[in-house]
Image (cartoon, rainbow, N blue to C red; front, side, top):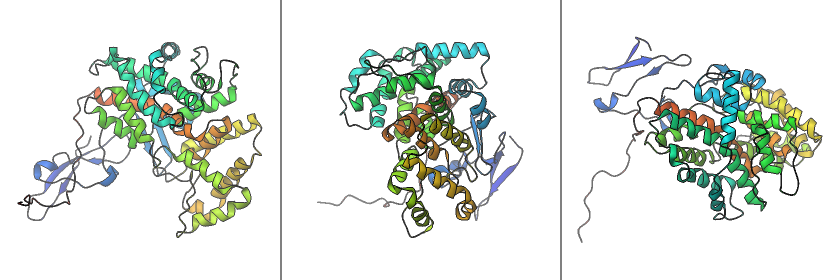
Amino acid sequence: MTDKKAYLTIEGQEPIELPIYSGTLGADVIDISNLGANGYFTFDPGFTSTAACESAITYIDGDKGVLLHRGYPIEQLAENSDFLEVCYLLFYGELPTAEQKSEFIETIGTHTMAHEQLSFFFRGFRRDAHPMSIMCGVVGALSAFYHDAMDITIPRHREITANRLVAKIPTLAAMSYKYSIGQPFVYPRNDLDYASNFLYMMFATPCEDYVVSPILAKAMDRIFMLHADHEQNASTSTVRLAGSSQANPFACIAAGIATLWGPAHGGANEACLEMLIEIGDESNVDEYVARAKDKNDPFRLMGFGHRVYKNYDPRATVMQKTCDEVLKELGIDDEPLFRIARKLEKVALEDPYFVEKKLYPNVDFYSGIILRAIGIPTTMFTVIFALARTIGWISHWNEMVSEPYRIGRPRQLYTGHEKRDYPKK
């Protein structure tokens, strides 16, 4: 907080005093909460210049390519930590001790099973239903099964709900996939780590076991970690807005999943793979790059650049290394689609047009390639994003309801008809 103040001067009126606050990092913010009392609102479509909340969870500096979780750089977490440790960090605020981490892993393990009656929900969906549509329904339905700890005013209830969500989302995600391909559900195995357990539930069958590759499990764990939270994006803001009405947390997370499903938000890695398929062959890369440079051509390269990061996406550096490890492990570095990706990557890193505009490969470019290499269909890409982001959503929800808060109520600039009378008959 600071003693600085801003003044809004409106012709013919006394200046309106507006306090200025300073956070730990980042730009100062002008408090305009009292403008309404003076008869004015601000106009900020998309809320791109508005801080709608105060948060201590994640910080992003897009110009410098910085992403911090509770102060820790994402590169250091990716190198030294794992997803469940990052879950603990996001929710509780500090890294766990060895004992705390062990207890947390054990706690998550006790919640990995989904209620058996929940399996009947899946039968109501068509087999060709998109897995994200299924996830919206079954995650929201959790409130009908786990209402024993739903008093959001009790910290222990919020903690139990967070643990249940982190533990059960991988199970529900794998069930959504199995249902879509007509295979029986595979129960979780708590002797496996978080990422390995997810891959096991995805690819094992009752008649044939599935041995999880440590390299692939590590890659999946990193994908989870790098998507765990990203500050006040559309889906996180949706979860907070839904939570401000005191809606139950399962409904709030379902709202976040619905928002993430939008192709402008969570579908980037899926769109990236579709682009590679459209290019078809590495001999066509130069043609498509030329089209991407042409302002009159509607074609756009997906997986390059980022709305927030005006520098290199810090998560992409980690994903690039992981991508190399996965392709080497699977021996498919020479597969046509991956040759296209490699050539595109080279162009983006060397071509003056892309370098000048800072259109570097982002995390979606590499994560999409990794997921395809592992054998995960594109329809599951956004589901995996939702799986990873659940801890970020529930951490932000918990942070909000832990302190005094108000129900969200954005205002509008009305441009419709003035008052008019109903016509007489």
